[in-house]
Each structure stands twice: as structure tokens, then as C-alpha cells.
Length: 216
Ligand code: SIN
Ligand code: FE2
Image (cartoon, rainbow, N blue to C red):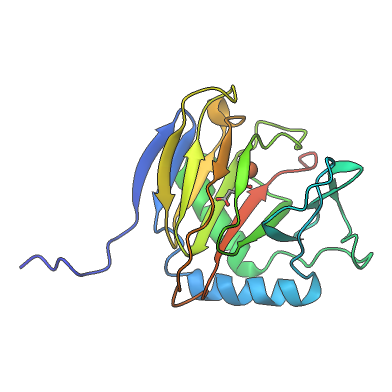
């Protein structure tokens, strides 16, 4: 008999040219990923950055890997050191590297070599306004985005801010990969609804892997 309550195998949902949602791909690795987020955050604490316009972001952020994304009154940039400590960002945990490689090749980006991972923590109400990921010099490399914990409504549009948006729920273990023709598509996260998740408690984490420097 079909067991309707069995854990489903990962499945894929095409999103746009060059973009796909790999549903639940990170589910099995999630406990290790969550433990590794905590370890990174002990060395490079999650912090709410300030935008060049002087607005304090609702999402708390940190990074791991050779480069990390930061924002302050002077602008957005990638930096090899954490401006809070002056130290290099913590290295990629092995669990991050393995999952990112698996996701990138499943999405058709087998040669993706990330050198940056932005870690976002959303508390209830936190959001990320519609934006493009365009601070990376080599736009041939995709973005690999991993969702953990509470579900969030993701918006995915087109090349223009005014293009129609698709809205979909990203749940625990889902991985979105976008590159190629959709690499510069606008996207964002709507305000997080309160809840409790068995692994992450009252928040959502998102990991985004990027190639932010030049390829070796
Ligand atoms: C981002 O756009 O950098 C993060 C998206 C997300 O939290 O899913
Ligand atoms: Fe983004």
C-alpha cells in the first residue's frame, strides 16, 4: 500500500530559464548544516547590517568562506575579513561544500566553485526586499540558496523590478538555484510568519553560495 506519510524523496520544480527549486534536497543534511551555522556564528556573530541608505536590515547576517558580503554606510561589498573582528571569515564547513556541490550539479552547474556563503537569519517579521544579486563580478556563476527552519514566501520576478512576480513557499530543506538567463532576476522574501520549527526554533536560516571573486 502507498504510504502517504513516508518522507518524500527530493523533487525538482522548474522556476525560470536557468533556475530550479530542488525541493527537500537539504533535508537529510539539515541537522549538520544547522550545527555548522551555530559554529560559524560563534566566531563571526550574526549581525544586522546597515544599508548605504542608513536603514538597518531586519535580517541578521554573517558569512563563511574566503569572501563575505557586507554592507555599511559606504556601500555593499565582498570582503576577505569580518569587519567586526578584522579576522578572516570562518572557512566553509564540509557539510556546506558537499551540499552546494550536490545542488549545483543537480541544477546543471557542475563547475560551480563558490568562494562566499552568506548566512541569513530571519526572525518573525524579518524580510528581504526585492533585489538583484549583482555584486559578483562573474555572472556566469549561479546562486545556490538553501532554506532551513520556518517556511518563507519567496518572490521571484524577472530582469526588471516591475516584472510580474511568482510567489512560492520555501520550506525546510528546499534549495533554489538560479543562473544563466535568470541570474539577475529580482527576488525577495516576504515578512516571516511566526512559528516554531523543530530544528531551528523560532527562525528561518538561508544560506546563499556565490562566486564573488574571479575563478581560479
Ligand atoms: C537572498 O536573496 O540573498 C536570500 C533569499 C532567501 O532568504 O531565501
Ligand atoms: Fe539575493
